[in-house]
Length: 437
Image (tube, rainbow, N blue to C red; front, top):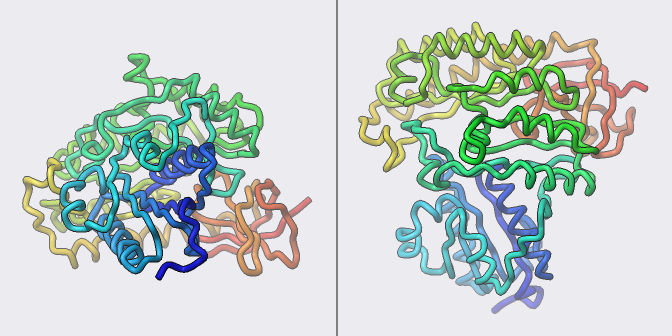
């Protein structure tokens, strides 16, 4: 029996995976809303007749989470709790035939570039005029801002090109319009994302245009922070650093996944770089943009990784003292370059190595945070949680980085506003402080 609360035309969009998927879901929801279709993001009310799951297919854990989520809603459909179930995104792009065969309860599967077809299935028109119009799932004051789609890099461990296709830059004029629309609607921080942001412009303009894009976005009235994610180290455009250094509303922050430091690993991963080039690049970035916070991600347990390779990475992390770092275990993905290699590092060793890297980083983060006590930072406040207002400095991105907590009974600030905060206490990954006038 269906519950009487179900609204057959109400859509619940469930998003799994990275910030690029969040962006895609927001565009989808904006299109549905423009077609007068009621839509919510990850609704907890269970009153939607239609569920759309935007899946991730990047690594094994993410794939399993996507499959588990699809199965949960397939069971809900069999029980009459929802009418229609659709699946889109990376997992659907990569494994559509297998998914169709294994989960027949799903009404239709769509790939990463099938938005018009998905909308047509929902009896909605794709509205080209919605430049920059999205239904944000984040707080209104910050938004993920996708500047390109796909990737042309040959990294041996990565399945992104299989799911997202070749690199396609969004024209600069269109991005400026999108940013202006967001700013008029109250967005104050743009988090620039792409599979490879440093490749921006090569396909459209035959040269890297990320520096020019940053300059033009920085001129958009109302945008107070620009934050750059997912830079690729090989061929990094140094003019970006000049723009970052001289432009006050570009955060001194760079998310640049480096993956490893051992030369044999970098070569096998097809990263187009070496240990020394990587070290030189990090030093150049820090020299050109004093005080910059660098976030990186690393892979533990790639095929052929020896204990010597692992210890080399540990020493490098300890010496480099990244401001932010994440480490993931290698996932053996079919149809990638590394799939022809023997996945010879046992799962428990992969996990031990990842944990060892993160233990080193935790100690570094603790030391760096202790140095901030007594200093004052400009903080953008994202939410109130329990007894605290919670925000971030320019050196921190949402969800993945450090946060600044101020006691709500001693301080007051509106969500989405900036305030000066003097740091009074520091933990491994959190700062505590008081708002000052």
